Amino acid sequence: MKTIVLVLGASGQIGTELTQRLRLLYGNDNVIASDIREANAEVMASGPFEIIDATDKETILATIKKYNVNQVYLLAAMLSATAEKMPQKAWDLNMNSLLAVLDLAKDKHIEKVYWPSSIAVFGPTTPKENTPQKTIMEPSTVYGISKVSGEFWCNYYYEKYGVDVRSLRYPGIISWKTKPGGGTTDYAVDIYFKALKEEKYECFLSENTRLPMMYMSDAVEATIKLMQADSKDVKIRNGYNLAAIDFTPKEIALEIKKHIPEFEITYKPDFRQQIADSWPQTIDDSQARKDWNWKHKFDLKAMTEDIIFNLQKIKN
Ligand code: SER
Image (tube, rainbow, N blue to C red; front, side, top):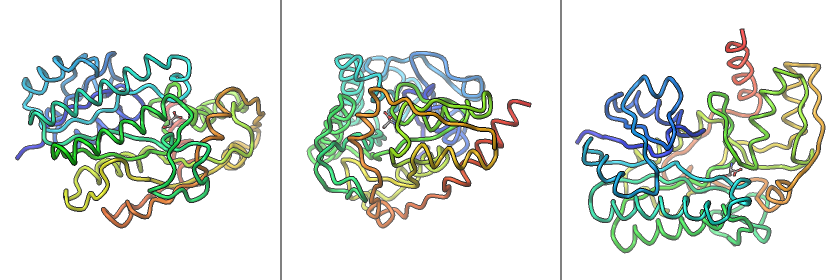
């Protein structure tokens, strides 16, 4: 059967690039982008787009029927730093959108659901190095609470109603096409823009704060690989640990300096430091590598080269 996808949150950091990759894979007209605001020019021009509030179940259902959608990628969410400022709103958005989509799958309106989880499911009591798939999950952020709860809902709908839902615990995702908004790992995106524009960057995390990270193209590939995996190989239905690289602000700055020798970084940690300190430093994703053959391509060096090359191209 033909795959027809609805992407909720297609104007966001991951949604923008995932939509384009899905269009390449399934055909432009078979991937319906949606968000509460218009997407970038490329997404708007290359295929269908609908304005949808991801918590509005009726409009999601109407869109599913209009286009005969059979898979939903739900990427709309409020990230960690913004969620701390608007806890109730974050909870409502992150939870109600997920429950709406899971219900639509339970009622057989769609066959497959993708929903991202995050390293934010972990908290201060979790082992920080090589964090295992199964471990203590006591998050200290609203975003983390919504992600850990969401994971349990995903597993519940799978066990109880047979809903084919799949999820990845993304590390910090680094991109240059669309910036993230309101996350704790956003510094690792901002730093490249500032390095090229001003040759300096004031970092809101301290120099030795190590966090798990990943380049966008790896994140997109992992998502598609998981969604295309045989259902029997998807052994985890709450959220797979997923890893590629890890670094500190100091290390990424040194890598950037290899391309822009004048670049200087300074540190002024704010409230996001505490969030970062509650998360793992490195992740054990061996289960994903074993179950559906996950492999990342980009290390810090290759990612930095690619980003600087592309940002310079835009600049010139
Ligand atoms: N990148 C996200 C954030 O910082 C984590 O999932 O909120």
